[in-house]
Image: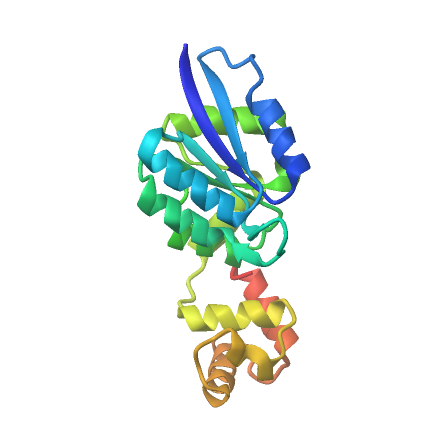
Length: 223
């Protein structure tokens, strides 16, 4: 029986134990699964570095938002860990598991990391995890329904905007004030305000407020 090695990275230990319990279930008939866990960003980096030297992870499951250390809770983006894993262990399959189900987050991860799957945590159960393992090991991308819906919305959209435009829309959506957008986007405030006016014209809400822009962007699959 073949051994399949999986690394799960999540800063909630109860979630890690749950995944480990389910994935190491002996009911997998084709192989035996060995699950390693990491509960911080830094430990995830170390485990991936070790794997590049001494063994291979067949699948790496990553949360999107991770703490750096147990003592210092500084949140890091799981996207960075995904990019690192792609470069360090290119033979490993990468699957994200996250509570985030908005289109921007999911499609941004797909573009930057090109993972082999994305699971929204609220849609994950024992059967879902088993199906994910079988599909991903057979080179079939795996997405839970909400993730697949986000991908389909993006594919169906005909409006083309650049990355800074997407960031403006996203940060307005999560409540960032226009005057604070310069902290997240490498543009001057004047340029951001100009882009926001252009976006309202593109989305057909040029005489309305920011909420109208957010609502229209959401309809068209950008959020």
